[in-house]
Image (cartoon, rainbow over all chains, first blue to last red; front, side, top):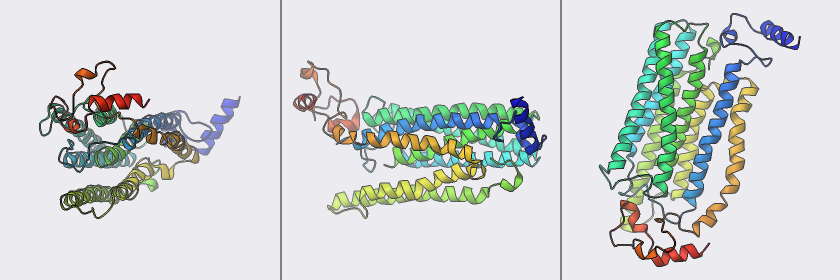
Length: 217
Length: 156
């Protein structure tokens, strides 16, 4: 009885054919289950990454010695990583563009947006893999590995977990791209793109902060 | 993200803003680095203390980028209060969790975690500063002598 009341309230306050119903069932709040679940998941991710960043801050400022980012011995390539940051920002923009296109019924543009986002994301992972390879093998500096010092441990843990999240996002986006080209999404059915987009933007957000904290300080 | 088309975000404006902030971030950092290197060579000081550079970098150049992504790309500006609360609450919680831990930084400074680990009783084989036996490049300059490591261990 109570559930019927909730559903009737939800349906009466929202168009049954509207985007909310396209996301699956609707809660009394007028927010879809999928969106609530995604934000709860992202909340746990915020705490996970902030735990890592917090540990880094405590360790970084609690040390008497630390590799100086402005010295010639600093192993990280900032121009390369800045370019990688640019790639990730581009991927967020193309994803928003793709989603807006799908919502407006422009499926071809929407699919192109998804494809570009996947490619940008894959490029980011590729550049990060190259960066790891060059650091590990000491192509420009002495080898820089997780056991080099505290900065090495922190660097590989934080960027490694972030890179893993990007890889998962790229796989999800690749699946969505295939689904898009098979005609699964339209102006009424786009929830998977929207929810995966939330995850992807979060990954972008984390990188913006990691780039400043790990590479520039 | 957008439920209705009137919630469409000004995509290209935001893209250019993010691009400008990233370029400013890297440019500002590079200028400070050159200033710092010049200061070290001439015995002067950089145009801005490092702590000020870090604060500018974080709060003037990085935070706006993060907010643009959070507010516009993740569409928080157009979401219901419940979603906004779900998004903001974890940041508050981690802030509460991290701030007390910052007091540990003072305790950490008195220790020497950033040195190669030396097992107790194995000091005779520990690398000494300048003997070239360290395998980790740039960290060699900071390696502790056995006596220093002993002193560091004793501080517990």
